[in-house]
Length: 306
Length: 306
Picture (tube, helix red, strand yellow):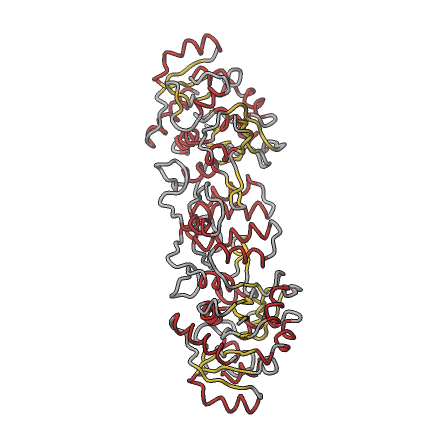
């Protein structure tokens, strides 16, 4: 079964990993958010793609869900000595990833090719596909003004109130990403922040239409459980944008895009409202992924549904 | 006293450090070799400049005489995982230096400015001056063909026999480097490899003439003691080029350029030959620098001579 997961952030990454654990029964492609990419020390940093590569490649710092386990901070100390801004902390092994990617991009390779090469090198079978090869940066308009995403997320610790999210650049989705959505037997919108992880993917021209065309084969998983995001600012962000910070609030964002919506057992009571208001088929599943087994089970349940 | 040291490699770096230990009585400038600079992982690496910065900044791995003490190798391991060539091993903190420099160079800053900023950040008072801001790479023609310097030096471990050394690029010396030579009360050609550490500096247009113009105030220190280089391939390189691997052989390379030549106590017997054949004033000093005290003493003795 060909499964394509739209992912960004820790929740989407964990679920994508769950599908990877079902290989080879599942033929997995992941369309990854690049909206939170940034230039750090002159290097191109792709946090969501790297979290996917490190997780699927078995390198990830499991506790944090990003970065490389056991990584050191010698370069960070040297950057500090040299007076470079260091609010965006990079581990040493992680730094090598950015150096490698930046070298290949400067050489003229597409991000899709670079990430494909890295996935191969790390023994990853799934196709990890940047949603676009173009510049497509999330800009967060806040009560403190417009901030580049990492400026908002890391430097300002997600404290400013978000008024609006927009995207810098005039990006087109990659052919590989569009094809992966169109050709899939199952399209999964992962339990990622709908505004800044999934939103940047869906905002690319033709992507929303491609998902819509696959809506009968598509499912979204709520990242909000009991009104809260498990990690990150999705709940506060929804509220700040005047939306409801519940599974229903997320479902409204995906109405007309997917026919099926998965909510956590803790939110079972919301199923009738979502079905009644939005006409989506709601499935209630345990969606909290604490272990690899949890990931595999949730992915397996989604395969069963399809 | 304004002292300008031409340096590259470990010997020249140690002597430059000796002069730095005499500050503020000495006002030190160092004209540094850039012929062994290389691109590694797409980053600009300047081994001689960095050995100077790390030594004068108190960061150096004292045992090796280059790199940063206590540095880790996490990035190196990641480069290996990603399939990057890793014969040129970079420590993690050292990698940050190259990332920083490359970012500033890509931004359009001159190498002289970048290195000056790094020296400031590391609390170094001496002016560390790249001999040139232009591309000026040493090419070693060997019995295995023409090799980029680090290809010869690191990857091929200085094993191929050197037939000839030439320089890639059409470099001009920096104004700062030329000025430092012209304005000095004492110009010192450090005990560095005359072919690949000092040679690339002297081969830049106008540099040889500037040293010659200061010849009465200039002194060279032999890097060859008892027919051997303390470190590196200078002895084999001299022999391979048909030159004599002795202090006399080195003195011949600097004849007409400096009026005074310093040899080690172990070579005292060569003094009459050097004076007789070349007309240089020879000074016999302990030139082996095992400790900071040795460095300071040798630098102090050279100041005394001048």
